[in-house]
Length: 196
Image (cartoon, rainbow, N blue to C red; front, side, top):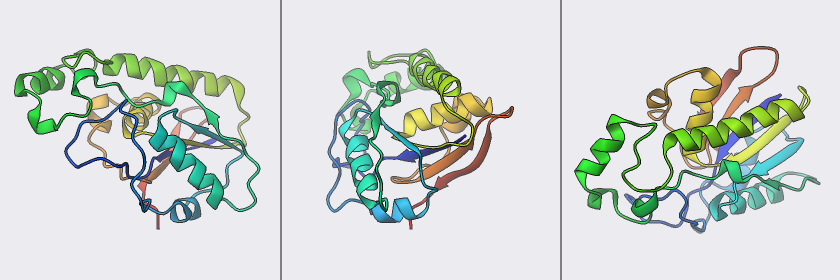
């Protein structure tokens, strides 16, 4: 099975703001254009989306740009972005340095913001990945429209890499990555393929 992870288009938020579970609309005009995103991808047989508005809106626009589509996207709550608790909507520069350092020292289990730990988010998205392996045939192309955090968590999970490694991987708005699952070890075909 080919799983194409697609990061949502650019949200309507100022640069330098912490957002995870903050439910944001897309910037208008939408960047990158949905048609450009679709043109770079294989045709899906199934489409899943995070419940957050920026992902759901991106999914709706992608489906409108997909020629002759008849698919109904499915909402998957386990694909939501990490909840950064008290940090949501705050400028990164306004978050106390000690809190940022605490998170950096223990990426998986620290929770200075009072939201969700990376370990809990990893359990959530890897639980989704396990259920995916049980239900889908190997010849399917699945689009998953979501967020940078879960995409990096899934990369760490499927490739057996430390989260600290995949957190450093660039991932633009509207960019995609393709994982080939089934038949043994998951394979990464591409990462951060930009639209257009």
